[in-house]
Length: 74
Image (cartoon, rainbow, N blue to C red):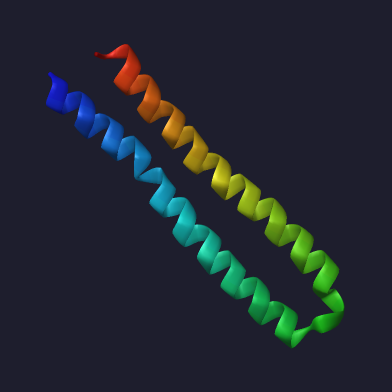
């Protein structure tokens, strides 16, 4: 049972990897867009920050789920 708890927690934490990849791709596209259209810097930056915050929230949710799995299924 303990190994299944560890496996479940590990899978829940993997959402952090997805968030990291998503933020990297979004940042790459935002830098490309700013390079093509520098006058739209403000709109692009605000959209990027909102998207990064939402992507990071999914990583935090995964961490919380992993902690809950470990603590509640001991």
